[in-house]
Image 1: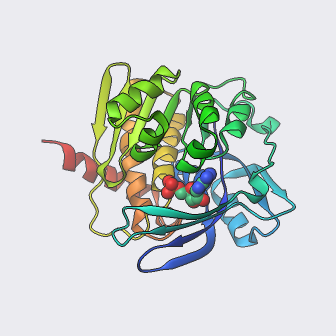
Image 2: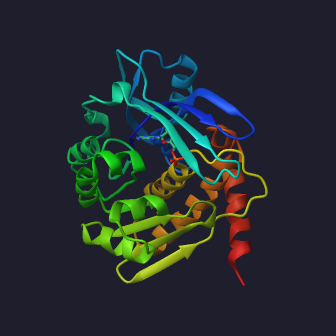
Image 3: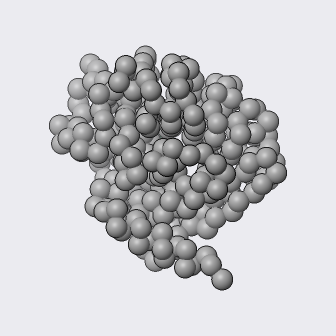
Length: 297
Ligand code: AMP
């Protein structure tokens, strides 16, 4: 059983061609919906009274939302603007709102989760919640510049409490104060986590485990509309795949990364969550086959 905890948001995303205002987003939302193509994830998150019913229905369609709290106040809001190549995103606003003082707890129905994903969120909340599960076989977390800049020590503590970390290349450098990705990964593993996956956007990712480095390429696309949530979709697919197999061997972790690349590629082809919501399982299997063809020689 998989539980995903993290931000559920109303996002404003400004791309060169289109601006989306207050659309359903959040790291936990992208990750859990991506994972839902492999297993039925349980969500723990918080929204405010302004959270539209249609978005509630979307979450309910894909996820077990018995762990979704609706509190008085405004939903977490994120506002970001991409440059003309969609390669750099500038954060214009992060409004924590109901997320700021959220005291998450694990619903009884989720207690037996053996896979837990701590999506981007306050590292103090993430570290608290992971300790409430009694039966964790595999856990993973992510983080973002905002938390590294405001709560770096807590981010390091969170990393100590999980089996794996997925993190963007730029954020790995910021967090570890190293310039080289191998050095970044070694430092992060030195803090007590077993696996580190450094995401490199369209260029794929690097998995580190003990002395092993497993590089994987991104699925090559001709058209990208909105990179938001690609990293979360990548991580959600990884842990969703592993939870569906109930396995965490290194060979399954490598396969989970391929599903991560594939789901990340679907996420960026459309705006917001649209890239994931229109998917069928057969689309995913087809793209995994194309990916295999791309990398075999
Ligand atoms: P990504 O494109 O993978 O970095 O993920 C973007 C998602 O992360 C958006 O939908 C945002 O709502 C969410 N997000 C942005 N900043 C934060 C933050 N400081 N904490 C938690 N989630 C965030």
